[in-house]
Image (cartoon, rainbow, N blue to C red; front, side):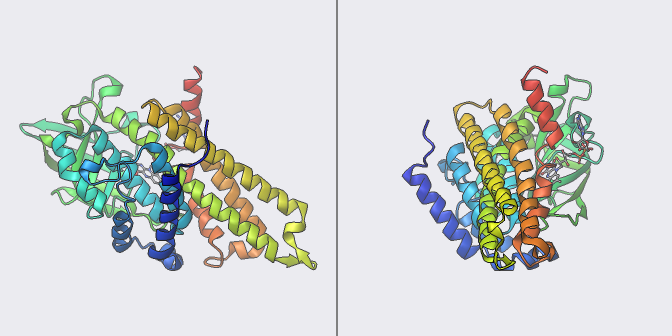
Length: 385
Ligand SMILES: Cc1cc2nc3c(=O)[nH]c(=O)nc-3n(C[C@H](O)[C@H](O)[C@H](O)COP(=O)(O)OP(=O)(O)OC[C@H]3O[C@@H](n4cnc5c(N)ncnc54)[C@H](O)[C@@H]3O)c2cc1C
């Protein structure tokens, strides 16, 4: 067991920290968060630094990193980029749209889409959830009916990250209504400018306010048969589960990075803020909260890297990924609450200190990529319960 990063990984981490500090307009995040602004310019810059194609094979223009090195990169991204909504949007693009295409796509699908998704030209989204089907993907009602050499899609997709900006959608739809639940769904690559695709709502959210999030309707959307991801019907559940496994590692690695930034700032504040003539860090009640933040950070990091290592060794990393996701999301919320508590009133004022925004961002993490309750159900099932 070796917990050290390789020299190449250390260099990657340093270069992403430098890039994010210098090129992703950290100073503008308060305004973007307040106004819910997603910036295509920042997207192109981040993609130019390789962040949209970390996992994509070199032959398709990507960085070709394994899960562990991708985790190093995402942790640095989440640490250096103050815009949590932007980091989340990029993570959802990479792990829920790009990874499924690179893993399950036919040669033609990979050649056609991976370069643009990687170089920042295209934004991707994975549209599974529906108004009537969130935790229960078995309840998906969007239909895809084969008509000659086309499929015709009809349904409503909600809460898909990036959906209001996306150029390319991975849409999960029912192709075998009466079939085995595991083979009921298929996944389609749908260009968002296809006739019949409409953004019907853009949501204002509590946190991750710079992430484009909304609702789509699909009305008689005709896509050619070669839009079927993997080229075979019935793979939708497996594709979705694979995407979730990667999200639970990659996106939560970014949250580990954010937790570290939050810890450093909380320590600095507790040292500089004086009450009763001495720094508040000198109060054991405050110092213990900070100690708990450090323990949560270290435990989250170990779980995320363990899941990444498992992902590199086998595709059966779902158990580790769920444990890492559950723990990291709840640790992020608990540590963000501690940070705001330590800041006192300053932590409650919008735009005064990043912890206020980070707490709002953290609250989404126990919901997306499967709620905490669903992670516990997955973990219990792996334990045979
Ligand atoms: C910021 C954000 C980004 C998202 N991005 C995407 C995306 O990119 N693509 C996409 O398809 N979806 C996305 N979602 C949707 C997300 O996957 C769902 O919100 C989530 O799965 C929960 O579904 P729901 O909101 O319908 O809640 P419900 O499933 O209705 O759940 C409501 C509550 O009941 C609990 N519950 C439900 N079923 C069970 C059960 N069997 N056992 C125990 N408790 C249960 C839940 O844990 C939750 O507390 C996103 C959501 C958010 C908030």
